[in-house]
Image (cartoon, rainbow, N blue to C red; front, side, top):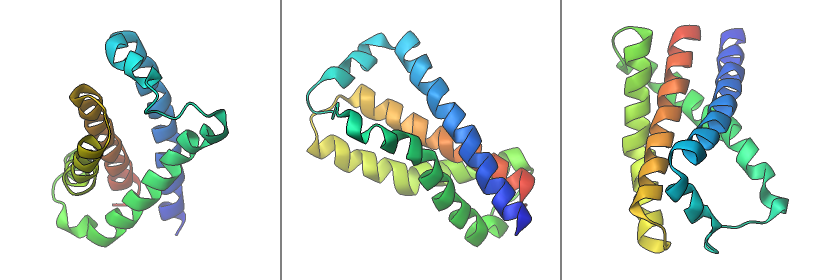
Length: 135
């Protein structure tokens, strides 16, 4: 149980740091994409800003459950297993969610592509952490 909790809280901390880094990197290197977030389709309410910071807890919990149930199916070293978890997560969760988001909300394909990349990277990071701490 200690390993499970250690892996979960480590993943939360790393994913939170990753989300901050990804935010600043995307603004610095992709300013045209970042400008799209000023569109009225995105909520600018400061009352809901805290939801952004809760996201790593939710993602880490969902991926922890997935890891606990299916870790025996992933073969190779921790990095390979983690990347495979991220790719599977991207395929079964991120891609369908982004497909329906793109089809129903007026956002550009470049925004959706960055969200897909971001989600897959989150899955890979959490997967590697879980494979190293709780194999």
